[in-house]
Image (cartoon, rainbow, N blue to C red; front, top):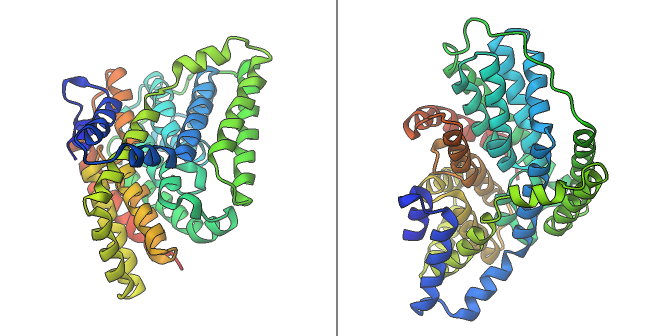
Length: 403
């Protein structure tokens, strides 16, 4: 637990991966987790590592070739001097990027592009930046590929694309809509007046067009893989390599630039979390979680899904949604629970982090990206919005969640 706390707080500015890996190492050294069991826990995350690596490469390729700058500029060009219209267009861009490239891409890569655009438009940046963070979580269950946490929760029991859409499409649309309305209402004062309308036109280079084509083809391949019920890790990596090869046809330096730009430390961070969660399982966390699932199974469907989702949402903000998703997914697989409770847990893991900046890794990285741009949105400012928006969006999405 101290490792997770250190990962969230980052004392002495030590990177998150060091806290997770050191915690995992100390567990093994102290004899609290056998080496063989730790190794098995790391190997269990292979599909997640491949998925993360592929998505990070795709996002970095898009950033390097100016695709995100181009998307943000399109939003500004069609805003016609209206901050309200720009807000809606930025939000829509975030929905598309999150659905096709995962929430990390929206929170980390789209955010700086949006910030550059709103600065040129001389608009109040805060509503647009918050939109990037909140939509990164609200739209993260449109598709299975929209959030690495989806793989963590379901693992090998991941529904096919048709099954996924049947279960989660309506809740995702509701979550996106309610989150938008909540953010729009809370930002009504900042979105008054007019903004600059003479935004410079940003055109995609030849390499940028190739990158965009590669991204669209990659997204199509991943959606097809999901429809066929395939594991998503290997196809994501293959799609990323394919996109890099396409862009390398015009820009031979692209692979090296992408390799340097990707935050590879995320992979050992996740591996460390797999080990920590395995130790928590040995310490009785799994048994406690299974008891909770057994109790929920004896209640009404409505009470079960609301209790499961909100409990997981609150836990995600206390210890981050990735370890919570790992524990929840492990418990679901041991209990063979694939019904309404499992689906509600997924909503809590994905949507719950919109309460605080510590809720998900994507939101933490979003905050770090803002600080690099010398923009400060405090944890309290985020919480004041999240305490209103998150419960409303989660409750509304649960109401339309079936099965």
